[in-house]
Length: 136
Image (cartoon, rainbow, N blue to C red; front, side):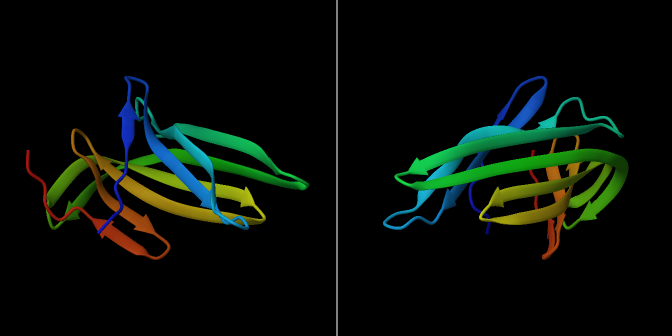
């Protein structure tokens, strides 16, 4: 039940397509559309990293400032059990995101990445997502 997500990868990082649209009189405006850093590789317990983005848009006399700061910390290696199975040595990554636009929106979540599989568990303020099926 999730929206499609798009990623690019290299030996040093995995980037996710970041899209943010704001309401504007007349029509919405996309102020962010780029591949932003999601995971800095290699994943090592204790490592921290950030991805920052800023833009300013001018609409006649109206000026709109927008910025996003994503910070992450690899906090542990854990065993995770989901309906799809048990996964060992999963990287626990704690994320914190701040979006500055008219108001400040702060979000925190935790992801558990199983080697050679990907996200097997995600905890957010509103609930938990678990991998329910996996086929090689």
